[in-house]
Amino acid sequence: MNTRYAILLLIVAGLAGGCRTTREGGGARYRGALRDGVPHGHGVMTWPDGKRFEGNFVNGEIGEGTTTWPDGARCVGPPTGTAMLNLPDGTQYRGQVRAGIPNGQGRCEFPGGAVYEGAWSNGKMSGAGTMTWPDGANYAGQWHDDLRQGQGTQRYPDGSVYQGEWDNDAPNGRGVKTWPSETRYEGLFKDGRQQGKGTQTWPDGCQYTGNFQDGIYHGYGVYTGADGTKYEGHFLNGAREGMGTLTMPKGHVYRGLFKANRMHGFGTYSWPSGATHQGEYRNGKRHGRGKHTAPDGRVVEGIWENDEIKKVLSQ
Image 1 (cartoon, rainbow, N blue to C red):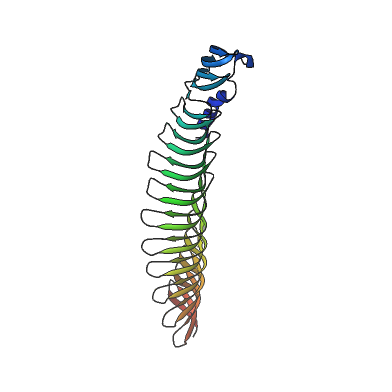
Image 2: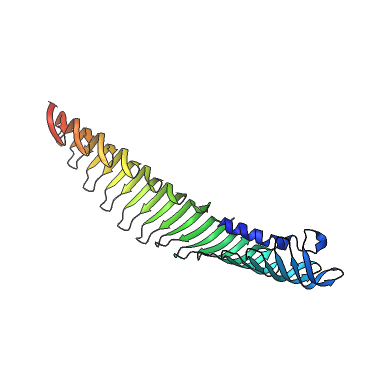
């Protein structure tokens, strides 16, 4: 997109600079009405590079008219005011210009079908404006130097919507994103993805509050399932990993180490009856040395394998 605007600036540069008579130098030639020895009225000016202007001159200055370039670019209008710019690739700008450069309010249609309408500064989209794309995407908000910057709302082709802070043409900072499924995330973003602290909720009642990295749970957080299951602890790449506490709906509680979402390492499991098991776990099951305490206080220490005691050490 920046290339297009660079072309725009090249096209309109002649309107702001070399637009006086041949006495200004540069090899320009003028044919037309004169007053006091300078172009005044209708006339035609041509430059050695093939650029040509035909229209009205006022005291040697270009006024309303048409400028054409050898590559097919065309500008219709005055250097300052309202003009129409057409580029060889099909890009069309209609709106306010200053010194031949888009400044103020204008509309630009791009060859691929995208359309921008809003504020311009020095030939670039800057200020409040709206861009629409052929695939149905739409952005309304702040721009700076052709990039989405500041507060804005983006609607995506899949029906999702982001509203919040933008930097360098991507969601960066605090914002809210919603999906057609009614999933909702509110928190921090980096380069368009959930990054940092945030809360994501799902239509079935599930909720996660905590740290995100590259759009997934990573770091410390709290996840609550639709059935009331709650995990509070550390995550790695979207899975329970490291130290945490898992509380289940019927009162079962595990506090200890996790790996790949399963109890793995040292931990303590408690039953609603009051029984507890403290020891080693592997792949979600008691495995290794452990101590089991029954509701009546009896204690058994032993070696477990795949959730079954294989050797009693003491009782």
